[in-house]
Length: 301
Image (cartoon, rainbow, N blue to C red; front, top):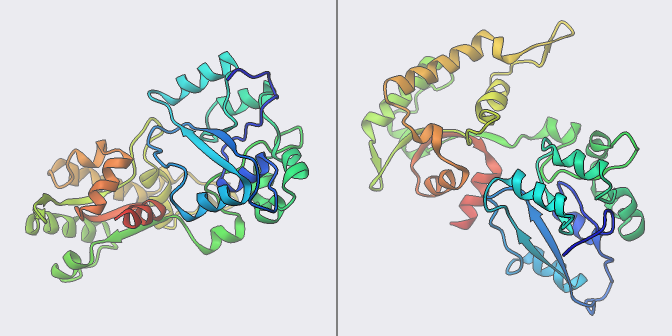
């Protein structure tokens, strides 16, 4: 569907709550049927519309249904082609770091969420975080995208998405060893691999992390320093966790576990979907991962 710039409502990095902001939400369910095209710039995304309480309630109360689409190859190529052809969907979800964010905003392809909220959904401001809105506000004073995963200052002080989880039965079978030191962690993983080479007929994976990509690995570059309580600054100066001796010791420990074969190629090459499948199969002895993915995987089971 070809569109002129700015003629269609495109919401960047949109969360589900923005759906009603992109179409007027009548109070009665007798609304005319409206379908919104929603492009998600992640090939692993496989959620559908309908068949669950949230999406069914949205459709019943607004008349809106959503047709999701994802890239078949490289996400950047698919989205770049959409922009060149000015053939854009109603909503777009993409990473905040993607260059297409500024291209869409500067090119006038997208509405600001502020304008949409004022016209269609004033309640947006009661549920959207003030910290997030301020962080994503552009130089022109408007917000064009709202993060689907975020936390304000107060929320961030209360909870985190990353967790370190250990399979309880195997851990207790090993005598509940201390894993808080590099030496204790490495020894426990080696013992687990030796004592439980298979679980339920499938190979045990001693340690799992998030997906490696062109940006590195968030479990190791972002979350491990947090678990080690490495401060972002010292004496008023920015502090690079990469230079921290404790962080370097843990990375060297992981390197030793790779060298002796305790950690195999799964550690480096598994994608998100593969990790979810192996998590459901109980193959991980321990995992440094986002709890949201763990929760979703367990619910599907």
